[in-house]
Image (cartoon, rainbow, N blue to C red):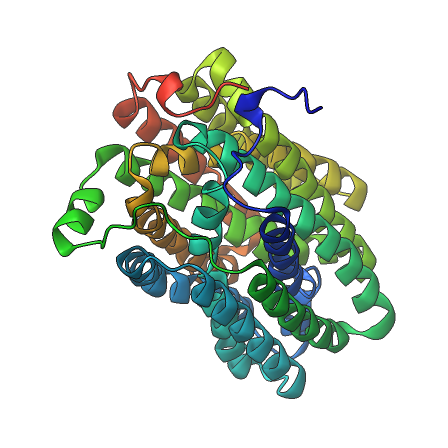
Length: 402
């Protein structure tokens, strides 16, 4: 007999095959996107790319998502389907990975990263698909678990990718990405479509209503700032900074692993922190500690110290993001969730694009130390935004009891 509290368990809306199939596909999704990432910025630089071009390569991933996430969420709600978008996303990842392996040119890497941006767009649908396993009042609990799973899978990808890059070369990780993406396609087809109970077509009028929800827009804006930080530093230029400290490809894999592991563990307990200290207080504290860890970054002189600092940074960021994602879908019906999630993820994808794109320009102009100082201001902007526009938010409406 399962004695776990009902609040922390998914509702029995799907069979074991669907649950297992989704989890396998979700694992392959993140593995295929991140198995090559630990050494990817350094690899792009080794091909002759300037820091500006490295930033554009990384930014292409976010730009495509900014463009596609809203229409994909809208179409998914309008026609009441999830499966085709997830399957096509994984196929796009496979195409991009094969392109990276066959055509190792800095400019073409922008194109192939764009394919991975197309694939990553399906996270909109994955999040809604997964949230459908839970009751509507468990939105923050569902997103916390989903982000924890994401972080764990990224950790595994980073560990494996770092070892593969060190021993077999970065191009081998591109081929691994392609194979894993195709395996994920098979897994999601095995899981099958998750029928929406009493489906209602999403109209333009209803979509416009969702687009006008203030808490959704505020949460999305703060999330965009958080993604700006993550993609410009944690994924973009912290690995390059680590390389200047003497980090090997395996060290870069460890750095990425610790960054996402700490983030994932923190995401899992974020709803509990919110219940105890309040949603607003948790977001403010997480943003403040994120800024502090970035300010300290230029003074780090060794790879182990950098890894430790990034662990703290991951914990701080992980207390913020799942709460923002929970806010984004809490007050909408299931028939509108893909649209709300699409809006949320499209807006935060601005940070995924603008972060690395502008960070490369800033780094070329004033160096990595100057870049870190500039980026430290973004969590502070998010903190102030939360204090101004999320003040008075009821924690009980944004988190589930756990």
